[in-house]
Image 1 (spheres, rainbow, N blue to C red):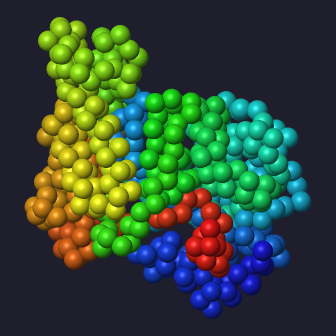
Image 2: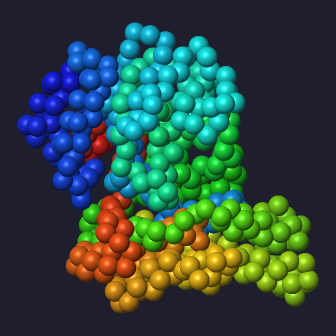
Image 3: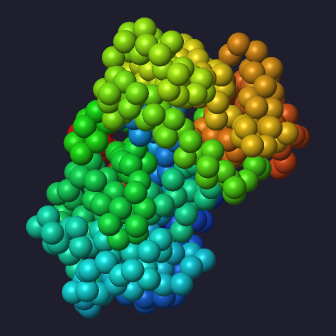
Length: 434
Protein backbone atom coordinates (compact mmCIF):
# COMPACT_ATOMS: atom_id res chain seq x y z
CA UNK A 1 0.00 0.00 0.00
CA UNK A 2 1.18 3.51 -0.80
CA UNK A 3 0.09 7.08 -0.18
CA UNK A 4 -1.53 9.05 -2.97
CA UNK A 5 1.67 11.03 -3.54
CA UNK A 6 3.76 7.85 -3.79
CA UNK A 7 1.33 6.21 -6.19
CA UNK A 8 1.21 9.19 -8.53
CA UNK A 9 5.02 9.47 -8.48
CA UNK A 10 5.39 5.78 -9.35
CA UNK A 11 2.80 6.01 -12.14
CA UNK A 12 4.55 9.09 -13.59
CA UNK A 13 7.91 7.31 -13.32
CA UNK A 14 6.64 4.49 -15.54
CA UNK A 15 6.52 1.76 -12.91
CA UNK A 16 3.00 0.79 -14.02
CA UNK A 17 3.66 1.01 -17.77
CA UNK A 18 3.97 -2.75 -18.33
CA UNK A 19 0.74 -3.34 -16.43
CA UNK A 20 -1.11 -0.65 -18.39
CA UNK A 21 0.09 -2.08 -21.72
CA UNK A 22 -1.47 -5.44 -20.85
CA UNK A 23 -4.70 -4.04 -19.41
CA UNK A 24 -5.20 -1.30 -22.02
CA UNK A 25 -3.47 -2.12 -25.32
CA UNK A 26 -5.49 0.52 -27.23
CA UNK A 27 -5.40 3.29 -24.62
CA UNK A 28 -2.93 6.17 -24.36
CA UNK A 29 -4.41 7.90 -21.32
CA UNK A 30 -3.95 5.28 -18.61
CA UNK A 31 -1.41 7.25 -16.59
CA UNK A 32 -3.60 10.36 -16.59
CA UNK A 33 -6.72 8.33 -15.84
CA UNK A 34 -5.31 6.61 -12.77
CA UNK A 35 -3.54 9.72 -11.49
CA UNK A 36 -6.76 11.72 -11.93
CA UNK A 37 -8.74 9.10 -10.00
CA UNK A 38 -6.20 9.22 -7.16
CA UNK A 39 -6.48 13.01 -7.00
CA UNK A 40 -10.27 12.78 -6.94
CA UNK A 41 -10.03 10.29 -4.07
CA UNK A 42 -7.80 12.58 -2.03
CA UNK A 43 -10.10 15.56 -2.61
CA UNK A 44 -12.93 13.52 -1.12
CA UNK A 45 -11.20 11.53 1.60
CA UNK A 46 -7.86 13.20 2.34
CA UNK A 47 -4.26 12.84 1.23
CA UNK A 48 -2.67 10.72 3.93
CA UNK A 49 -4.55 7.47 3.29
CA UNK A 50 -2.69 4.28 2.40
CA UNK A 51 -4.59 3.58 -0.79
CA UNK A 52 -4.87 0.76 -3.30
CA UNK A 53 -5.92 0.55 -6.95
CA UNK A 54 -8.44 -1.86 -8.47
CA UNK A 55 -9.89 -2.68 -11.88
CA UNK A 56 -12.83 -4.76 -13.17
CA UNK A 57 -13.50 -5.27 -16.88
CA UNK A 58 -16.71 -4.98 -18.80
CA UNK A 59 -17.75 -8.06 -20.72
CA UNK A 60 -18.82 -9.11 -24.18
CA UNK A 61 -20.97 -12.07 -25.16
CA UNK A 62 -18.97 -14.03 -27.73
CA UNK A 63 -21.06 -17.14 -28.35
CA UNK A 64 -24.44 -18.49 -27.35
CA UNK A 65 -26.98 -15.83 -28.32
CA UNK A 66 -30.07 -16.19 -26.09
CA UNK A 67 -29.03 -19.65 -24.92
CA UNK A 68 -28.52 -18.90 -21.23
CA UNK A 69 -32.20 -18.52 -20.31
CA UNK A 70 -32.80 -21.99 -21.74
CA UNK A 71 -30.09 -23.40 -19.42
CA UNK A 72 -27.65 -23.60 -22.33
CA UNK A 73 -23.99 -22.81 -22.88
CA UNK A 74 -22.32 -19.47 -23.55
CA UNK A 75 -18.87 -18.11 -24.22
CA UNK A 76 -18.20 -14.64 -22.82
CA UNK A 77 -15.08 -12.56 -22.30
CA UNK A 78 -13.73 -9.65 -20.29
CA UNK A 79 -12.72 -6.62 -22.34
CA UNK A 80 -10.30 -3.74 -21.84
CA UNK A 81 -12.97 -1.16 -21.03
CA UNK A 82 -13.17 -1.23 -17.25
CA UNK A 83 -14.15 0.35 -13.97
CA UNK A 84 -11.21 1.47 -11.85
CA UNK A 85 -11.33 2.24 -8.15
CA UNK A 86 -9.06 3.98 -5.67
CA UNK A 87 -9.84 2.65 -2.21
CA UNK A 88 -8.71 2.49 1.41
CA UNK A 89 -10.05 1.15 4.66
CA UNK A 90 -11.58 3.73 6.98
CA UNK A 91 -12.04 3.79 10.74
CA UNK A 92 -15.83 3.77 10.60
CA UNK A 93 -18.52 1.16 10.09
CA UNK A 94 -19.53 2.77 6.81
CA UNK A 95 -18.83 1.91 3.19
CA UNK A 96 -18.53 5.15 1.19
CA UNK A 97 -18.35 4.88 -2.60
CA UNK A 98 -18.22 7.91 -4.86
CA UNK A 99 -18.74 6.97 -8.50
CA UNK A 100 -17.78 9.71 -10.95
CA UNK A 101 -20.85 11.64 -12.01
CA UNK A 102 -23.13 10.28 -9.27
CA UNK A 103 -23.94 11.15 -5.64
CA UNK A 104 -21.93 9.35 -3.00
CA UNK A 105 -23.42 6.11 -1.69
CA UNK A 106 -23.06 5.35 2.02
CA UNK A 107 -23.94 2.00 3.61
CA UNK A 108 -23.55 1.16 7.28
CA UNK A 109 -22.31 -2.39 7.74
CA UNK A 110 -24.72 -2.94 10.61
CA UNK A 111 -27.72 -2.09 8.39
CA UNK A 112 -27.78 -4.85 5.78
CA UNK A 113 -31.42 -5.66 5.19
CA UNK A 114 -33.00 -4.93 1.76
CA UNK A 115 -34.47 -1.42 1.47
CA UNK A 116 -37.37 -1.22 -0.97
CA UNK A 117 -36.78 2.40 -1.99
CA UNK A 118 -33.23 1.43 -3.04
CA UNK A 119 -34.49 -0.95 -5.75
CA UNK A 120 -32.55 -0.53 -9.00
CA UNK A 121 -30.04 1.84 -7.37
CA UNK A 122 -26.31 1.28 -6.90
CA UNK A 123 -26.60 1.56 -3.12
CA UNK A 124 -28.76 -1.58 -3.13
CA UNK A 125 -25.93 -3.51 -4.79
CA UNK A 126 -23.42 -2.32 -2.19
CA UNK A 127 -25.74 -3.25 0.66
CA UNK A 128 -26.57 -6.63 -0.86
CA UNK A 129 -22.95 -7.59 -1.47
CA UNK A 130 -21.92 -6.64 2.07
CA UNK A 131 -24.86 -8.62 3.42
CA UNK A 132 -23.95 -11.70 1.42
CA UNK A 133 -20.28 -11.53 2.46
CA UNK A 134 -21.42 -11.51 6.09
CA UNK A 135 -23.92 -14.35 5.55
CA UNK A 136 -21.19 -16.49 4.02
CA UNK A 137 -18.79 -15.90 6.89
CA UNK A 138 -16.44 -13.44 5.21
CA UNK A 139 -15.20 -10.30 6.94
CA UNK A 140 -16.66 -6.90 6.15
CA UNK A 141 -15.67 -3.40 7.20
CA UNK A 142 -15.85 0.25 6.27
CA UNK A 143 -13.89 1.70 3.38
CA UNK A 144 -13.73 4.74 1.14
CA UNK A 145 -13.62 4.39 -2.64
CA UNK A 146 -13.71 6.56 -5.73
CA UNK A 147 -14.63 4.83 -8.99
CA UNK A 148 -14.66 5.92 -12.60
CA UNK A 149 -15.80 3.83 -15.54
CA UNK A 150 -15.15 3.38 -19.25
CA UNK A 151 -17.66 0.52 -19.50
CA UNK A 152 -20.17 1.96 -21.93
CA UNK A 153 -23.72 2.09 -20.62
CA UNK A 154 -26.27 0.60 -23.02
CA UNK A 155 -23.57 -1.08 -25.10
CA UNK A 156 -24.12 -4.62 -23.87
CA UNK A 157 -20.78 -4.54 -22.02
CA UNK A 158 -22.44 -4.90 -18.59
CA UNK A 159 -21.55 -1.79 -16.62
CA UNK A 160 -23.80 -2.87 -13.73
CA UNK A 161 -22.16 -6.29 -13.42
CA UNK A 162 -18.71 -4.68 -13.48
CA UNK A 163 -19.73 -2.39 -10.61
CA UNK A 164 -21.06 -5.33 -8.60
CA UNK A 165 -17.85 -7.27 -9.07
CA UNK A 166 -15.86 -4.17 -8.13
CA UNK A 167 -17.63 -3.95 -4.75
CA UNK A 168 -16.93 -7.65 -4.20
CA UNK A 169 -13.29 -7.19 -5.18
CA UNK A 170 -12.88 -4.28 -2.76
CA UNK A 171 -14.32 -6.20 0.21
CA UNK A 172 -12.43 -9.33 -0.77
CA UNK A 173 -9.07 -7.55 -1.02
CA UNK A 174 -9.38 -5.03 1.80
CA UNK A 175 -10.80 -7.41 4.41
CA UNK A 176 -10.34 -11.01 3.26
CA UNK A 177 -6.86 -11.22 1.71
CA UNK A 178 -8.42 -12.23 -1.62
CA UNK A 179 -9.78 -15.52 -0.24
CA UNK A 180 -13.04 -15.40 -2.21
CA UNK A 181 -12.48 -16.83 -5.69
CA UNK A 182 -13.66 -15.19 -8.90
CA UNK A 183 -16.69 -17.45 -9.46
CA UNK A 184 -17.91 -16.92 -5.90
CA UNK A 185 -17.61 -13.15 -6.38
CA UNK A 186 -19.84 -13.48 -9.44
CA UNK A 187 -22.41 -15.50 -7.49
CA UNK A 188 -22.43 -12.93 -4.67
CA UNK A 189 -22.90 -10.17 -7.25
CA UNK A 190 -25.85 -11.98 -8.79
CA UNK A 191 -27.40 -12.45 -5.34
CA UNK A 192 -27.19 -8.71 -4.65
CA UNK A 193 -28.78 -7.87 -7.99
CA UNK A 194 -31.58 -10.43 -7.56
CA UNK A 195 -32.44 -9.84 -3.89
CA UNK A 196 -31.49 -6.21 -3.14
CA UNK A 197 -31.53 -4.51 -6.57
CA UNK A 198 -34.70 -6.44 -7.50
CA UNK A 199 -33.61 -7.54 -10.97
CA UNK A 200 -33.83 -11.26 -11.90
CA UNK A 201 -30.55 -11.43 -13.84
CA UNK A 202 -28.58 -14.51 -14.81
CA UNK A 203 -24.92 -15.15 -14.01
CA UNK A 204 -23.13 -14.72 -17.34
CA UNK A 205 -22.31 -11.02 -17.01
CA UNK A 206 -20.93 -11.19 -13.50
CA UNK A 207 -18.87 -14.29 -14.25
CA UNK A 208 -17.20 -12.78 -17.31
CA UNK A 209 -16.40 -9.56 -15.44
CA UNK A 210 -15.04 -11.42 -12.43
CA UNK A 211 -13.03 -14.14 -14.16
CA UNK A 212 -11.72 -12.23 -17.20
CA UNK A 213 -10.34 -13.61 -20.44
CA UNK A 214 -12.54 -16.03 -22.34
CA UNK A 215 -15.00 -17.82 -20.06
CA UNK A 216 -17.15 -20.82 -21.03
CA UNK A 217 -20.25 -21.26 -18.88
CA UNK A 218 -22.69 -24.18 -18.86
CA UNK A 219 -26.02 -23.28 -17.25
CA UNK A 220 -27.53 -26.78 -17.34
CA UNK A 221 -27.91 -26.43 -13.57
CA UNK A 222 -28.38 -22.66 -13.21
CA UNK A 223 -27.90 -22.87 -9.44
CA UNK A 224 -24.46 -24.40 -9.95
CA UNK A 225 -23.18 -23.36 -13.40
CA UNK A 226 -20.00 -24.96 -14.67
CA UNK A 227 -17.45 -22.21 -15.34
CA UNK A 228 -14.25 -22.76 -17.28
CA UNK A 229 -11.67 -20.09 -18.02
CA UNK A 230 -10.28 -20.70 -21.48
CA UNK A 231 -6.63 -19.72 -21.84
CA UNK A 232 -6.12 -18.12 -25.22
CA UNK A 233 -3.67 -15.36 -26.14
CA UNK A 234 -5.94 -13.01 -28.09
CA UNK A 235 -3.07 -10.56 -28.58
CA UNK A 236 -1.25 -13.17 -30.69
CA UNK A 237 -3.85 -13.46 -33.48
CA UNK A 238 -3.49 -9.92 -34.87
CA UNK A 239 -7.18 -9.08 -34.62
CA UNK A 240 -9.14 -6.48 -32.69
CA UNK A 241 -12.62 -6.79 -31.27
CA UNK A 242 -14.91 -4.01 -32.47
CA UNK A 243 -18.26 -3.14 -30.92
CA UNK A 244 -20.30 -0.95 -33.26
CA UNK A 245 -23.03 1.21 -31.76
CA UNK A 246 -25.65 1.64 -34.45
CA UNK A 247 -27.53 4.24 -32.44
CA UNK A 248 -30.78 2.32 -32.19
CA UNK A 249 -32.94 2.77 -29.12
CA UNK A 250 -33.96 -0.10 -26.83
CA UNK A 251 -37.08 1.76 -25.73
CA UNK A 252 -40.36 0.11 -26.64
CA UNK A 253 -38.59 -3.19 -27.31
CA UNK A 254 -39.46 -4.96 -24.06
CA UNK A 255 -42.07 -7.13 -25.78
CA UNK A 256 -39.60 -8.10 -28.51
CA UNK A 257 -37.04 -9.26 -25.94
CA UNK A 258 -39.61 -11.03 -23.78
CA UNK A 259 -40.99 -12.94 -26.75
CA UNK A 260 -37.74 -14.87 -27.28
CA UNK A 261 -37.61 -16.81 -23.97
CA UNK A 262 -41.41 -17.06 -23.97
CA UNK A 263 -41.52 -18.68 -27.41
CA UNK A 264 -38.58 -20.96 -26.68
CA UNK A 265 -40.25 -22.11 -23.46
CA UNK A 266 -43.53 -22.62 -25.31
CA UNK A 267 -41.77 -25.12 -27.57
CA UNK A 268 -40.17 -26.83 -24.58
CA UNK A 269 -43.54 -26.98 -22.78
CA UNK A 270 -45.14 -28.51 -25.87
CA UNK A 271 -42.46 -31.20 -25.65
CA UNK A 272 -43.18 -31.77 -21.96
CA UNK A 273 -40.14 -29.86 -20.64
CA UNK A 274 -39.52 -26.53 -18.94
CA UNK A 275 -36.59 -25.34 -21.06
CA UNK A 276 -35.09 -26.33 -24.41
CA UNK A 277 -31.89 -27.68 -22.87
CA UNK A 278 -33.95 -30.61 -21.58
CA UNK A 279 -35.59 -31.34 -24.95
CA UNK A 280 -34.14 -34.10 -27.14
CA UNK A 281 -33.16 -32.43 -30.41
CA UNK A 282 -34.02 -35.39 -32.64
CA UNK A 283 -37.42 -35.71 -30.99
CA UNK A 284 -37.97 -31.98 -31.57
CA UNK A 285 -37.35 -32.27 -35.30
CA UNK A 286 -39.55 -35.34 -35.55
CA UNK A 287 -42.33 -33.49 -33.74
CA UNK A 288 -42.30 -30.30 -35.87
CA UNK A 289 -45.53 -31.24 -37.74
CA UNK A 290 -47.38 -31.53 -34.43
CA UNK A 291 -45.62 -28.50 -32.94
CA UNK A 292 -46.93 -26.28 -35.73
CA UNK A 293 -50.43 -26.90 -34.40
CA UNK A 294 -49.38 -25.69 -30.92
CA UNK A 295 -46.84 -22.90 -31.37
CA UNK A 296 -45.87 -20.38 -34.03
CA UNK A 297 -43.40 -21.05 -36.82
CA UNK A 298 -41.19 -18.32 -35.37
CA UNK A 299 -41.08 -20.16 -32.05
CA UNK A 300 -39.94 -23.30 -33.87
CA UNK A 301 -37.25 -21.36 -35.74
CA UNK A 302 -36.03 -19.85 -32.49
CA UNK A 303 -35.81 -23.32 -30.98
CA UNK A 304 -33.74 -24.41 -33.99
CA UNK A 305 -31.40 -21.49 -33.30
CA UNK A 306 -31.06 -22.58 -29.68
CA UNK A 307 -30.09 -26.16 -30.53
CA UNK A 308 -27.43 -25.02 -33.00
CA UNK A 309 -26.07 -22.04 -31.06
CA UNK A 310 -25.82 -24.06 -27.88
CA UNK A 311 -23.50 -26.43 -29.71
CA UNK A 312 -21.66 -23.52 -31.30
CA UNK A 313 -20.83 -22.12 -27.85
CA UNK A 314 -19.12 -25.42 -27.07
CA UNK A 315 -17.37 -25.45 -30.45
CA UNK A 316 -16.07 -21.93 -29.85
CA UNK A 317 -14.62 -23.00 -26.51
CA UNK A 318 -12.98 -26.03 -28.08
CA UNK A 319 -11.56 -24.01 -30.98
CA UNK A 320 -9.86 -21.62 -28.56
CA UNK A 321 -8.50 -24.49 -26.47
CA UNK A 322 -6.98 -25.95 -29.65
CA UNK A 323 -5.66 -22.58 -30.77
CA UNK A 324 -7.75 -22.79 -33.95
CA UNK A 325 -8.71 -19.14 -34.45
CA UNK A 326 -9.92 -19.73 -38.01
CA UNK A 327 -12.51 -22.24 -36.80
CA UNK A 328 -13.42 -19.81 -34.03
CA UNK A 329 -14.13 -17.02 -36.53
CA UNK A 330 -16.17 -19.26 -38.81
CA UNK A 331 -18.32 -20.34 -35.89
CA UNK A 332 -18.86 -16.73 -34.77
CA UNK A 333 -20.16 -15.76 -38.20
CA UNK A 334 -22.36 -18.88 -38.35
CA UNK A 335 -23.86 -17.87 -35.01
CA UNK A 336 -24.57 -14.41 -36.39
CA UNK A 337 -26.31 -15.78 -39.46
CA UNK A 338 -28.44 -18.01 -37.24
CA UNK A 339 -29.44 -15.01 -35.12
CA UNK A 340 -30.48 -13.18 -38.27
CA UNK A 341 -32.37 -16.03 -39.92
CA UNK A 342 -33.75 -18.19 -37.11
CA UNK A 343 -33.59 -16.26 -33.82
CA UNK A 344 -34.71 -13.14 -35.70
CA UNK A 345 -33.38 -10.60 -33.21
CA UNK A 346 -31.51 -8.32 -35.61
CA UNK A 347 -34.45 -5.98 -36.12
CA UNK A 348 -37.81 -5.58 -34.47
CA UNK A 349 -40.81 -7.04 -36.27
CA UNK A 350 -42.81 -4.13 -34.86
CA UNK A 351 -40.53 -1.60 -36.62
CA UNK A 352 -39.10 -3.19 -39.78
CA UNK A 353 -38.13 0.16 -41.30
CA UNK A 354 -35.41 0.58 -38.64
CA UNK A 355 -32.63 -1.92 -39.37
CA UNK A 356 -29.40 -0.39 -38.14
CA UNK A 357 -28.04 -3.73 -36.97
CA UNK A 358 -28.79 -5.42 -40.29
CA UNK A 359 -27.12 -2.55 -42.14
CA UNK A 360 -24.05 -2.71 -39.91
CA UNK A 361 -23.75 -6.47 -40.45
CA UNK A 362 -24.10 -6.05 -44.23
CA UNK A 363 -21.45 -3.33 -44.39
CA UNK A 364 -19.15 -5.33 -42.12
CA UNK A 365 -19.46 -8.38 -44.38
CA UNK A 366 -18.48 -6.28 -47.40
CA UNK A 367 -15.46 -4.69 -45.70
CA UNK A 368 -14.14 -7.92 -44.20
CA UNK A 369 -14.65 -9.79 -47.46
CA UNK A 370 -14.26 -13.27 -46.03
CA UNK A 371 -11.83 -12.30 -43.28
CA UNK A 372 -12.55 -11.82 -39.57
CA UNK A 373 -15.99 -12.56 -38.10
CA UNK A 374 -19.15 -10.69 -37.14
CA UNK A 375 -22.48 -11.15 -35.36
CA UNK A 376 -25.22 -9.33 -33.49
CA UNK A 377 -24.09 -8.42 -29.99
CA UNK A 378 -26.15 -9.25 -26.92
CA UNK A 379 -29.94 -9.15 -26.85
CA UNK A 380 -30.31 -7.66 -30.31
CA UNK A 381 -33.12 -5.72 -32.05
CA UNK A 382 -31.18 -2.46 -31.61
CA UNK A 383 -27.84 -1.32 -30.25
CA UNK A 384 -24.61 -3.03 -31.16
CA UNK A 385 -22.90 -5.58 -33.35
CA UNK A 386 -19.61 -7.33 -32.70
CA UNK A 387 -16.80 -7.84 -35.21
CA UNK A 388 -13.40 -9.51 -34.99
CA UNK A 389 -11.39 -7.42 -37.44
CA UNK A 390 -7.88 -8.20 -38.77
CA UNK A 391 -5.61 -5.38 -37.65
CA UNK A 392 -4.58 -4.74 -41.27
CA UNK A 393 -8.21 -3.78 -41.98
CA UNK A 394 -8.89 -2.00 -38.72
CA UNK A 395 -8.39 1.60 -39.88
CA UNK A 396 -10.49 0.99 -42.99
CA UNK A 397 -13.22 -0.73 -41.01
CA UNK A 398 -13.43 2.00 -38.38
CA UNK A 399 -13.44 4.78 -40.98
CA UNK A 400 -16.18 3.26 -43.16
CA UNK A 401 -18.39 2.19 -40.27
CA UNK A 402 -18.17 5.57 -38.56
CA UNK A 403 -18.99 7.31 -41.85
CA UNK A 404 -22.39 5.57 -41.57
CA UNK A 405 -23.06 5.47 -37.83
CA UNK A 406 -21.18 8.55 -36.69
CA UNK A 407 -17.89 9.49 -35.02
CA UNK A 408 -16.78 7.20 -32.20
CA UNK A 409 -19.51 4.64 -32.96
CA UNK A 410 -16.85 1.92 -33.40
CA UNK A 411 -15.15 0.90 -30.16
CA UNK A 412 -11.87 -0.95 -30.66
CA UNK A 413 -11.32 -3.42 -27.82
CA UNK A 414 -9.19 -6.35 -26.78
CA UNK A 415 -9.99 -9.43 -24.75
CA UNK A 416 -8.40 -8.76 -21.39
CA UNK A 417 -6.70 -11.66 -19.58
CA UNK A 418 -7.64 -10.46 -16.08
CA UNK A 419 -10.96 -10.19 -14.30
CA UNK A 420 -11.54 -8.22 -11.08
CA UNK A 421 -8.08 -7.44 -9.69
CA UNK A 422 -5.96 -5.20 -7.54
CA UNK A 423 -3.67 -3.20 -9.83
CA UNK A 424 -0.08 -3.38 -8.60
CA UNK A 425 3.30 -2.65 -10.18
CA UNK A 426 4.16 -6.32 -10.35
CA UNK A 427 0.73 -7.59 -11.50
CA UNK A 428 1.95 -9.16 -14.74
CA UNK A 429 5.02 -10.69 -13.08
CA UNK A 430 2.88 -12.19 -10.31
CA UNK A 431 0.45 -13.72 -12.82
CA UNK A 432 3.31 -15.14 -14.89
CA UNK A 433 4.74 -16.80 -11.77
CA UNK A 434 1.37 -18.38 -11.04
